[in-house]
Length: 306
Ligand code: FDA
Image: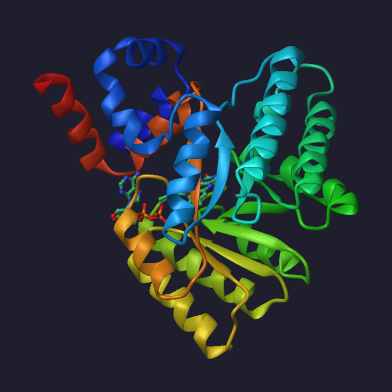
């Protein structure tokens, strides 16, 4: 119930104004967002790299409604990629892109514009020797994201994508994408989805995650295990151990279980942290609140006690 309310609020302009205008929100936001600008993002990447972690950076934004804003997002990614290269982090940091941030929701030719913009970001990543992973948004966009992935991979075969275990279709998508050279980031899924397309029960989502993991780990691609769930992380490590697979990695979100991130990295695994930055943090922040009731309590407590 709380999760649905928060996810509905994530799409509401009224709630957005309310949350964004409350100055006391900021300390809670700072737990999940690395900062407002590229300087903060580079600093946070440096801190991760210093203790052996990798990064994937997300220039926040998901409601791009004009071509100018989409162009500005592409420019921000190009700047970010050259700053990562200048700082010597391009070997340890890639970028994550939401197609809605680069124009997919534009009323005319949205998907075509998003494809071309994503292509420009891929070219900038290629120039500094790193990779791009396409984030996955709500289920109405899954086919479109996978179509764009296929197009991008013609010129940039290293482009990866996220798949969401809560969708009933995802096990088959994993089979389709478990081929050589393919990079799949498997997560549980963070949007409000109907029962017609998505498992609603946490146990069913977890079971689907394990089935998808098995497909990816048995395939020829590069699985990216994106979860903070200790049980799923242990299952992934076990599956990889049984196949003597060393071509996979673990991933977590910035600010969530950081000590566990360091422990996994120190044990010799690749641990990549999804690092969001920028001032368009509202949707991302609300999804993080929705994932864990304790975050809401923390947020509300900070409002009344600060
Ligand atoms: P689960 O939610 O069951 O949490 C397991 C444990 O992790 C919790 O008990 C708690 O200890 C900790 N935890 C989880 N979330 C927390 C939070 N917000 N605050 C504090 N502790 C928390 N989704 C999507 O739909 N599209 C996408 O493109 C992506 N991309 C993505 C990239 C990466 C690298 C990660 C790690 C995750 C995503 N996600 C995503 C989000 C994902 O779908 C999911 O919502 C969260 O990862 C939470 O699910 P867990 O697997 O961690 O399990």
